[in-house]
Structure formats: C-alpha cells, structure tokens
Image (tube, protein in one colour):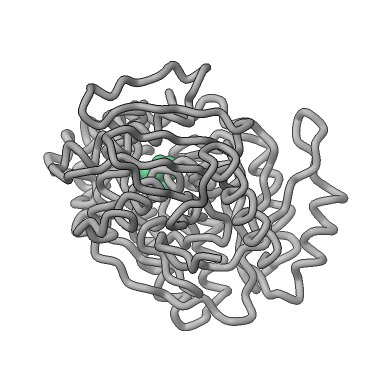
Length: 392
Ligand code: GAF
C-alpha cells in the first residue's frame, strides 16, 4: 500500500510539473470510504458507521498572483480545465468534463460561503476506484477544499469542509446525496470507523479489532440506476416522514413504526422500516465492534443486507450472491453486506486476517458478474481524513 501511495504521489507531481513547468508548493490528500453499516440513513438524519480507506485523491497546488484557477487531471489523460474566481463558474457537460464539475462545484461552494480565494494551479490524481461506490467524487471535492485551505490557511474546519463538499454535490453537480461520504473523507480516523450522528454531525471513533481485516469486493456490476433510484428512495423516505409527522425518519422508533402504520402503503412502509431498523442496527453495531463482538457484528451486517434487499430494494442478484459467498466463508467470525448507494458496486466484509486468503479463493471459484468478470478485491485499512501531506 505504501508503494501505491508513493506511485500516486509521483504521478500527481509529474502531472503538475508537466502542465505548469514549475513545482507545486503544497500537496494534500482526501480518502475514499467504505460504510460498514447504516445505509441511506444519512439523509434521514440517522446514524452511519463508515471508515475512510487508504485509497486517496491527491492534489498538488501552487498559488497564483491572479484570480484564475487551472486544474489538470492525471486520471483523465491530463485533461485541463480553467476558470476565473471573479466570473460566474459554469457547469460543464458531464460527457465532456464531468470530473471538472466536482472541482468547480467545490470552489463555488467555498466562494458562496464567503471565503476569499486566490487563484492557483492544481493537479489531481487518485486511486479510489471510480464508479465502485467508494466515494471517489467525495474524495475529489474534499481534496480540492483541503488544497485551498492548506494553500491559503483558510479558517474552515473539517466538518464545514465536508458540508461545503456536500453542497457542491447537491447544488452544482446535481446529486442529492447525504453528508456521510464527505464527512468521513474529511474526518476519518486511522484504525477506526466513525459512528456519525447525521443530525448533529457528532462523531465517535470506534476502534476496529486489530486482527480484523476490512475486505472490499467490487461486484463489477455498473451502478446504472443509482442516481434516479437514489432520488426516488429519498422521496419515499420523505413521504414516510410526513406520514409519521416527524422532521425525519430518525424520529421514529420501531414501536411507533408499527403503531402508527395505518394509512401508509406497503412500499413506503417497507422503505421506512429499513431506515428505522437500520438506525438501530448501526448503533448496535458500533457497540458490538467496540467490544470486539464479531459474531454480533456479523449478524447485524447480515440483517442490514437483508433489509436493503427486501425492504429498501437496492441490491441486485450479483451483489446478493457475493454477500452469500463471503458469509459462507466468514461464518460467525465477522460479516458481509453491500456497502454504499446500491444497484451494484461493492460488498464490504469484516473477517479475521487469517481468513482473507480463503475468502479470496472462494470469490475466485464461485463468483462471476453477469458480464463474466471476477470480483476485484481490495484489502483496506481504516485511515485518517483529509489533510496536508509531507512534501517530498
Ligand atoms: C451514497 C450517498 F452519497 C451517501 O450520502 C449515502 O446516502 C449512501 O449513498 C447510502 O448510504 O454514497
């Protein structure tokens, strides 16, 4: 992993120098994330338990004397974008320069927050797998914010940076995501998951047992429906909150869910049941993990997956199969479930390090995506959130 990080560092520095003919003056990073449990609960003001992973977006930066921002993207064939801080920042077409909208959106959010920005030259490179549901876009937004913060010494804390990154995504890019991905990218803690209360944004670090590996298996199923279905799920949750007459489903407990169900159609009830039970599972999971009770953690992960499959209906058959294979290998020593927005993407497993090889072998033998691909497996380490990197 250290090799991967240093290769990434060399790549971003080389891109910067090739594009601008000078060396950068600072280097920052922001990580991707994997969510251990608590899915679709963030925009219901609920609880999530993600950890930042050791796959990152790096930004090399150098200040300019004017108000221009130039950016080169190493991961997109060194394509460049450029705009001015004192002119309206336009949204570009996704087909042409989709990546640049995350940069533009973050800068726009910083400006809208009243921060005085100076121009700069930026180079971006990342190794967070793209389109896998591991939050490569949140890592990019947070890394851009961190680059301005580091270059200019901006007085903006990690939580505010995450909120501005979420605004960039909601208002500029146009995805109505919750706060989880940006918050864990900004505030992750090495060796820990964070139990985040998405209403107060308070976070409690939960140590992962030392001999437990975090395995991510990418199903290689494209997350095709995720944007439209994501927005539909949000609307269904809002409709359920209106039925229960609460600000958000966070305010409904399991007793009330059943007691005041009358008049709610079956589909909306099942959506609400996922959120209400998932919030409780997330709190229980944080408690189980904290004492190293992996059997309980595994049971909660299994129940979370079943709820996403049957009530929230965001899994697909290939993902369900991937989870079953991992659950077979892991037994009661840990667990597995789909992670992220759904409709493809990745499965996360917590398992004893001694079982990682067996899990990999089982996936190779038993799993094929509908297109015939094998799963891609990443072994991750819970990592620190965004910040400056020592300059080489
Ligand atoms: C996506 C969103 F961006 C998050 O805010 C969260 O809702 C997640 O899906 C589902 O838990 O990653």
